[in-house]
Length: 68
Figure 1 (spheres, one colour):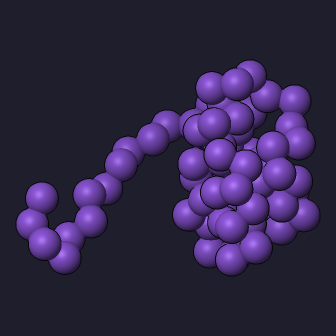
Figure 2 (cartoon, helix red, strand yellow):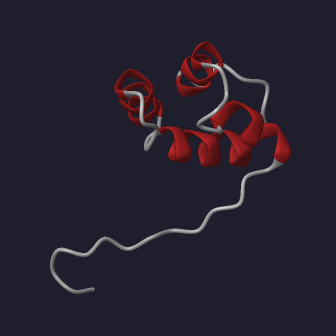
């Protein structure tokens, strides 16, 4: 990887995780998901938290990173 360039990761979420982690999902739903407070399988939860760790809302992204 060259200096200054970030590597992009392509991740496909399950439909269950996507409804909580999608950037257009309601903010409260994304906040709840960032805390890990969702009835999801472990792999779906980790994938969702990874996506939320890059959420445009700072509180969501910080909370998701702490939850990971």
